[in-house]
Image (cartoon, rainbow, N blue to C red; front, side):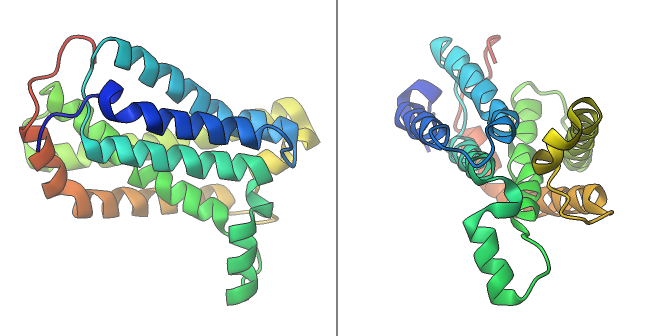
Length: 212
C-alpha cells in the first residue's frame, strides 16, 4: 500500500472533524462539560495540522481511527455522556440501569491510542521485540487512562458540582475502575485485530523523519 501523508488524505477528515466540532458547540447540553470533553479534539487538530505542515506521514489505519475517536469524543461532549441518544437507546433496548456510552468511549480510549502508540514506537525503532512491543503498548494505554481518571478527579475537586456531568459516573462508585477495564479490553482487541494490518502498512512507508 502506498505511503499516505496526513496532508494528502487528512484534509477532508480534519474538515469533517472541525465541522462537527463547531456544530456541537452551537447548542451543547452543558457548555462547561463540552469545553472539557472536546478540548482533547482541539489539541489533536492542532498537532495534526503541525505535523501536516512538516509533511509527516502516518498509516491510513491510524488516520481513520483518529478521525473516529474524535467523532466519539465530540458526540459525548455535545450531549454529555450520560445523555447521549445512542446510549439512551441502548439503555432502553437492553434494560440497562445507566447510559453506557461512556463505556464505548473508554473502550475507544484503548482501542485507538494502541495503534498510535504502536506506530510511534515502531517508526522510531524504539522497540524491536514483538513481545515487548505489545506489552509496552498495553502499559502505555493503561497509563493514559489512569492519567485521565486523575484529571477527572482533579476537575471534581476544582469545580465541584459543575463537573458532575464531566465525571459521568451516574452513581456508580466503581466507575473509574470500569473505565480502566474497558480501556484495557479495547487495547487488547486492537492489538489482536490490527497487528498484521498495521505492520503491513508500516512496511510500505519510508523511515520516520525527525519531525514526527
